[in-house]
Length: 317
Ligand code: SF4
Ligand code: SF4
Image (cartoon, rainbow, N blue to C red):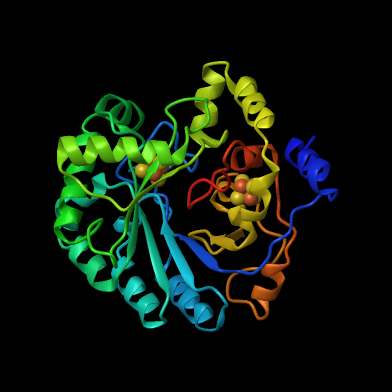
C-alpha cells in the first residue's frame, strides 16, 4: 500500500500528485564520489564508474535553450569529478541559467580541484555544500575519518573566494540527521551552525538547509541492519504535514540521470522509478513533464514529514 498517497487523499481529496510548472532541471553527472557516506541514497563511492557522456551534456544544453527551466542543479556523486564540468557550466552560463552545484565540500581539497573555486566564483555558481553536523565526531562517523577537517578547510578556501561572504556568491550548507529521526527546526539549527562555525572556526556561510534522511539506499540498509526501518517509517507517517504538499520539489523540477533517463526527483532516481513521460530532448517534453503524474512511494513520507524536506530545505513552518 502507498501510505503516502493515502495521506495525500485524506487531506486533498485526490489520490494523486501532479507536476506543475517546470522551473528546475536537476542533472546527475554520475555516481563517482570521493566519499562513501552511510546515509547516501544513491550508493555513490570512489569505485562507481557511471558518468554522463559529453554527447548527452550537449543535448541537454540544446534542450535547455528552449525549455522553461531557469535553474540547473548539478549533482552526483561528486559533480566536481566530471571531466566536462567546466565547459558544461560555461554553456549553462551562456544560456543565462541560474546554476547550483551540490558539493560534498571535502572534494574541493583534492589537489586537482585547487582552481575550481575561482572558476565557480567567476561563473556565479551557487554552491550547496553538505556538512551534516558542526561536530567533528558526527560528520566523520557518517562520512569517514578526516572529512570534517577537510570540509572546514574547503569552506575556508571558498570564503577566500567570496563564497558565503559576497551577496552574489551564496554558500548554502546542508544538514541531515545522524540517525532515524527528523531534522530539528531549521532556523534554530542555522543559528547553532553559525555560532560554532563562525565563532570557533572563523568561517562564513549564507544559510543552512535541513534535509530528512530518505529510507532508501545505504540509509535503508543501515536501518534494516539496526532493525529500525519500521519505526522510522512510523515516525515519518505520524509527522505527515499536508502543508508541505504544495512545495514538494518534484512539482516544479525534474531530474535527469547520467544515462539520460528522467525521474521526478533524485530519490526516485535512486529507486529506479522513472517519470511517466519520455526522455530528455524530445519535442514538447516540457509540457508533458509539467503536468505529469508524479511517481510516488512510501519513501515520499520523508519529504512530507514535519517541516518537510527538499533540495532547498524545509517546506513549511
Ligand atoms: S552522500 Fe553525497 S558525498 Fe556522500 S557518498 Fe553520497 S554523493 Fe558522495
Ligand atoms: S520522494 Fe520525490 S516524488 Fe516523492 S514526494 Fe519527495 S520529491 Fe516528490
